[in-house]
Length: 320
Image (cartoon, rainbow, N blue to C red):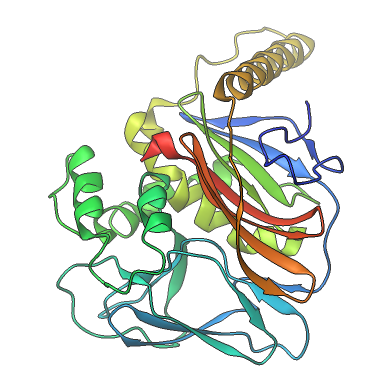
């Protein structure tokens, strides 16, 4: 398949290629392969939640002795008996440094208690339906700013219309985490294109395969999984069973299905016609640049070194 033509025009994506699409119900994942960018701390082993100072203020720490951490866009943290938080933006954190985000958002209305740096926490990425609102709320210091959108998100899926994101992420976790195994993370994979119901939903590119492996579950299961899960329950399966009577016939039928899925993906990418618009630079760290795009079709943030792509998290605004 073709290169990542949906990225901003100023980004050099010539070294990247798309692999064979994989489909699990309504969720399709196209693996991305390309050049690794060294020296970036991965998000689980190289980035730690220090604490929630007070509601809406979150501290993250890079415990490394070298390299810089790129905070995954819209990462959030879940911990029992504490009010869960998510970030509205990405950022750079140098080795050994701690950064406080004053524009974080609570995603669990009316739950008391502050998150702390404990081993029983786990992280997610905000569901794609909430990401446009979260991005546009960056810089706004109001911890309850996403509650109405979370309420509408829950109501859309027949849940109580409250600002409690754990109604999906925690209570539906057993179902959502099935996407981690139903979609295979491949050796050398450092990104993915996600489609939900046949429509382009997001493009996620990491600096290297280690970084992507650590954020993989948060993306597949929690950022894009809920939209797929509720639009077509996992129990519905992935289509008719193979009916060939021989091994050769099964292989031919499977190859035909793969060609059909690849054709569907190519058509969906052509229909999407993403126009990221002009990027706005937000932050610098040495030669790295963090930029934001927000147009009528696509929004998100990405990191470059010159024109070389380092990290990207872009999503369809229509999913909101």
